[in-house]
Length: 330
Image (tube, rainbow, N blue to C red; front, side, top):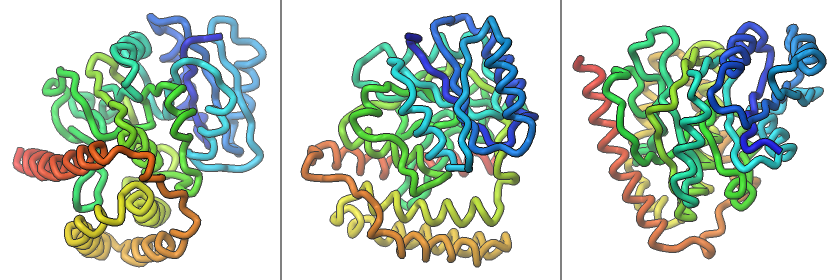
């Protein structure tokens, strides 16, 4: 059994996946296997993967072929259920990792048994001097955000704790995943990693950022541009799920006005971008489906952990504002 399983969800990603796989071929850390979960691709992905399974001798690689697209959450969950490694790396197909990427992530997560996940330094593949993601934060406005996006890579040299790990390139402790549950398949895609991190953080687990582990990320490879109807609708819907599932009623009441302000700002923003109908549709769908959400059982959660997480959300709001101003003033 390999110590690490790298799960790569794929949907029609043949033009990205070859470079991703090749970058894993030269890792300094060797005790890992690759598991590609193909979400019913219609391009040449399946032929490529079957060839790798049949003829590849230098990589421990296998694939699971699904008949339909279960989304990121559903596809990854199939992979998680099929592996029994101590650690799991979730890796987008539109990435290229540095040679010591796996080694640095394993080294970071092994520093404490309380560490649930570690986010690497994700670098913008289109401009390799800029950060794509150095961990994710969450604000009182109800917005998740990429820490460091658009900032200089050279500014990110220190480890730190973060609110959430991006599931596009992070390492996770499998035993904690088994404890708290896998990704919520109601999300299909977008914010499913924030939801997972919320659940882990409510139980007192730690999520870190490791700048020594580096990866180039193209971004929006499967869904297209930064904003499109599909992404806007699902993100709006899933944020409703996220708040309802992971905040107590008292928290929702306490945060109501900032959450309302955040919704109004996004309404104006997507009106300007031409996606207002999609945003409103997503909000409506989210509220309509709340009865189907599996909410956190807060009777099992320590009040101190709830308060600590609320404090981080408040602090995250200030960090978001600071980084927004910094990014737009430079």
